[in-house]
Length: 629
Image 1 (spheres, helix red, strand yellow):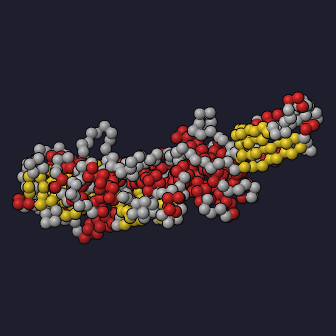
Image 2: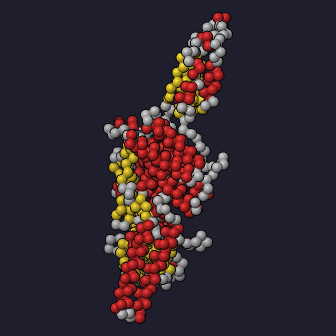
């Protein structure tokens, strides 16, 4: 088998493993025979596929899972939280083993491989109450106990001496003691009973399976980078990216052809041919971009597993509800969304959701609700992460903000402005930081991650009814719709979704501040100005009246981007910079625009930081002033 063929099969095998994990997570809620049979077939298919690829350890682990699921299907084993945790641990082993297979293109067989093969175990209790004459008949109970101990790991051992007489009455050839052993072993109960066949009639021998205590891991499984990758493409992502770039170059070449047609004055046939090429290039470009789209379902599945593990650890009862799993988003966006979503989920579990006792005392159901929802709106992907827990304590947030000097003591804030305070670095009302998180601690990191994706993050809360975080991110990072500006001869691109208005300013609208900053006074706002030629190092630039100001929305409020001219509105493909290039703040990426020239795509989050360091709080809206503090 060729290496590229084997890689494709391994990717499909990984998808089967993830599908099996999703089915196991549903097993606690739906344990009907058809669902169990489907899981059994999944494990069998994984075993067979791994054997075909020569992945012997993967096949062995899948075989162990198949055995356990067969016992569940036939009623020989009950479905319990411990059994599901055991099967999920084997899923972790499969993912780790496949990660080794994918990274080396040959399966690791040494002792130092990513995961060790640990067959599924069951817990048995053995009770021995042999007849007093057993020793005279050659039956030694210690030999029986040692034989059982060799088949697994002893959890507890107990010796009963209630029948032991006084020392002067002991007969050394009589048995007075009883024994009890609890052992974890992969051996079946039938094989264990076979050890005692020769001891039948020698007393009472009790052997039965007991349920181990529910697993409470120190930390929920942190999904690996391989987990977070949305492997639903059966072709190399590099090939897809190359296709998108070729489609973009075709669009640029079409624009150059149209420009040449206009210069030479082509006839009707040339006009028709150019229009046809333009339509074809546009369709190819759109089709290439859709190849990069993947559903958010794998990301949601990873979060569902994380919620289950952490809820067990925190002794909280949580039902996770997912909606919109089929919503598609760019593959890179899907991968980068995992960390912000995981932090919001962790925050809800640790501080937002109460314990069952606390909820019942408030008249709530003991089982909390945590929901994830995804949908597309106006070319963007919107995700909601919410819970029905405590909600934000707005009064306490205001009190903490005043105590830290973040807002004036007499400031009157709306609920939305108060809620926005939790995104400030290090802001927290928690007296003690929880083991997982603190409400507000780290949310600034989440906010920065979302802004880096070109998105925004909002929060709404109701007292004792929960908190909902809403993330809005671009459908794709490969391409954006933007305004092309000209500034000192350099082409610049501003994402269209942040542009509020275009202004040709008058001299009486411009105000210079004592600290050196500048603001533009509009009818409904005061907007800090960003001299792009100075910030980007294009030229020192004159401090005169700018020809054009693009008013854009940033985290702190509105920003006015000074430019010489607005050239066009275009869809542009983003291209990252090589590591050896040192790009200053304010530039997100490069792009090739329709006339074939290179444009710099502006990073509004970085420009916002530049202006917030110099502009006073009064230079923008109240919300902007709040964030600048």
